[in-house]
Length: 455
Image (cartoon, rainbow, N blue to C red; front, side, top):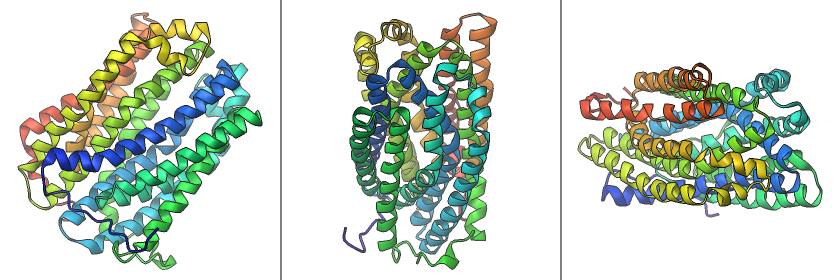
């Protein structure tokens, strides 16, 4: 890999659709690869271990989400702020943000790892983990927890690069992780019969290698990012820590609220047994296929909006929002048709269990609602995050994660006695909240008044 690779790019010039797609495509491919190697765990375990192994990986994946929401929240906040600093041509603060992100997130990763290692039994019990898959779930979860430093490290380095307008290199690094994960999954689970433990080990090794390559690239571009990686400079810089916490904490709360509310809902679903756990786990993976498009567009759009506002190009912002909405709508519509017409084929990729495939058919209408939410959310998240509106982020977090997701689930699943369908629909309907809030925010024009994040 050549040294001094230029990674800072201007996202405020050129056609909005072209720039958005150019920047989002590597993000989409990165998400696709990450989704593939996450799905490979379930597919390989489902085929070689069976429904019990598949269910264990599904619950283990929920725990992995539980421990990564902090990384996602602060990484996204750091990306937005770096984009703003680049737009304002304040590169000195980029270097300070790099040091602050490393110090904050790696410290949090180590702290969370220790906490979860001492409390995982209570977490598994809270999730109503079926007794027959307890050991499998424990193995998968603990291995993933021990690799949390690599997960946090990769997320923060990728956020730094994307904030500078470089989405290509994060894609290359996740590609490395994906290839390693697939090969090791087949080796550990298929050949050595290591079960969910082997699948988790393959994932952690892939992430570790990916993080090392990403860190190497960042080090070679240390002059451009104004950070020399001297040990003394890994600290919290006051002038960037305040805006990072101001924007990051609501994003962390948002991620935490959604994650905990989904775990709350899933704890009810898990009580229906291993078949229900397997169906829900597979459904989440299938929905993540359109979710990666949403995340890519949301991230790309947020970076573009942040740079546009930093550079004072206000008229460019609505164009980014509308373009983002259209871009996501096309693949979401195509995927909805496939899910509606061929659900047995999709779920059959993960399991041959007749009971799983039968229950899967009842999930199809819920999936349609999920796809609608995945279409409407990213453009609005791009506007909210890109404008650095921490208060609105907090409002979305509380309404989406706490009030609506848990409220709808209890209303439909418990009060109206819809059973497992009620919990499925409750989770899906909550996903429409960000669109309603973001739509009002866009029309109001209040995003135009957002002051510089660095002020």
